[in-house]
Image (tube, rainbow, N blue to C red; front, side, top):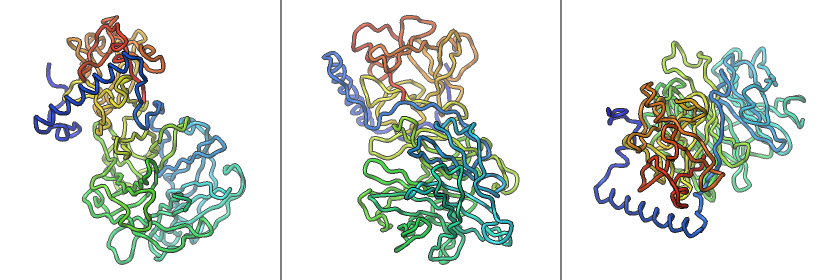
Length: 504
């Protein structure tokens, strides 16, 4: 069989996984020992611990909303998600709500504020965020002037009504910072009982378009107080393509740490996410408390057809168990003219996964359509189905996340079956050949369709999970053995456990 994709493809993690032979042998021995211990535990009827941060799969369809950039979704205690975003006309602030994230796609949209017809707050209405603070609603946004559209500054609206789609919005004016310069993308978060404001601004003494800053909030949520700390100056190549930009900060907290993502470079296909991290117990106003990733954590991906992902926010799934990355991108690379005049940035969603070291893993921008899932082994509860060197296997700590993400779609062979499509290689499917499982490109043949189709069943070892029975070899189920995947008949409790997976 020809190889399903080039061995030099940059989306594989071969350079990461390859190493001295002894290291590979050591890893296999550890994996084998772990498998033996798990089999013994299952055979003895002992519980098998689930991995940290295990959470059920989420199911969304991308894009969520077309022509909505810089999306911000806030989940409130009233049971609603609230979505606001930049509209292509840059002339107003819109808001919609729904009880589910997917419901935001079709929810009615209300204009809650429109630009001034003259002077301040009269142009370039950008990047609104909605927050609920001290029993009132606040919207942070950026705006230029009618007579100087690039004189962009940060402003705040307030609404005391329980439902922010109704009631009146009071203009609380401009957020004052140490410099009267280009500033935008205000966001707020609370850590250890202290509320902070983070934003992007052009500092007069630094020759960048914008850096990221942090300060404590004052008595009112439209004021800052005390020290202003510069957190990010764009210096890496991926932060300075087109423009020297760090903007759109957003914060997620977990595992005793604070992670601040930000957007870098021009707003075309170069746009991407960087990340800072700090201990939750650190002095956040000390720049030395923060560590900056040397590489982007989320970037364009030609294989999935997603370009310029950025200006994100974070929310949580309906069951509260999964963190959700909210962002915009385009589904094409080439833009004619200024990217800011291109209206087709779309609001998108995908699940955030967490690495064994407690850091977030955003993976790659997933293809349009249904969001993918991971399949976690029932009996080796820290291991996931993944592809590597074209072979399907289970492994723990799959840091190249997309290798372990699959979209469950209608079976290529029909008959009520399902197929598992690779996330980072769309058009490639999990299929068996010689009873061993591989990820290979669909050649359109009936043989491939049958080999890549499975009957989805309740988990053989746990009905909360799933098992996959071969469509063209009934009685044989997908199971792992010695770290690799096969379709085999299963009978013992250990074999049933090895053929059971949990969707995350």
